[in-house]
Image (cartoon, rainbow, N blue to C red; front, side, top):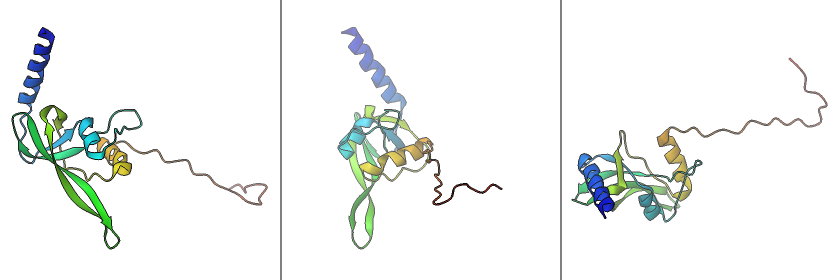
Length: 140
């Protein structure tokens, strides 16, 4: 019983330490990604993908964040940029981050945006050169 009380006290202390203000860009827990996209997505290392958003409003135990998304597309102008407002629990806000919030596409393109934010470089495949009808490739 005492362990639960200590866990609650420590989580309350962490929440109180992170003072959120309107306009802060925050990194959100994987549970928010799952709720927003309907999928439990992970990167190549198996870590859950975490999206970011902008704080719109705070309440004692909840935070309203605006998540930039690509919305439906039309044949005239393609996908349009929009945003989704979502209430999340305070413990789902992991940290305040620097920079602009990212534009999160559909679930298929989510990993590429996450990798860019984390500074991961996608490994390019080695080029393959084909020769047809040549027994030897001339040297320099």
